[in-house]
Image (cartoon, rainbow, N blue to C red; front, side, top):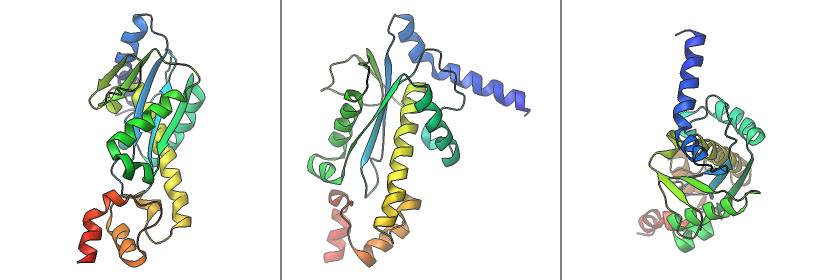
Length: 217
């Protein structure tokens, strides 16, 4: 495939991913916020969410579901999205809140924080597969939204890079768990760290019930 052909494919992909946003803009809705989360599955660290309002003429190629992108590409797009966005906001809940109200509710609450943190109140929200009952703004839940909506994809990149950077910093505070590599997910190295050093203050105890039970037998 030539460079020109790859460029055309990226342009085509961007147009496909702007479908939901374009439909809303065509209805006269100017401010559409994409909302997504990262970190529902890890054993440690916060759940991080992002809300972002992109301009109608957003033409940045390569924006996609953050899980599909390399770390280098995510870092590159992170800066571009922040520069080009009309506004964006990050919301999060730590391990204590996750243990207190469960991961799903903590995720929804963190999404609400991100939306409230936007400098401009969105007129419509596009969200990845969830409905936020406590947010009184029209919203559309889209299954696999981070792969089909450019705004949700942009939010997923902002949330992913923010959380990954936090987990890399936690590696310095809590060495021995592999946080810089596994970002808090339950890898072999992570469990070996738990066996050797025990639970840290950033671990989600509600996620470690089976592990602790097995250890105490």
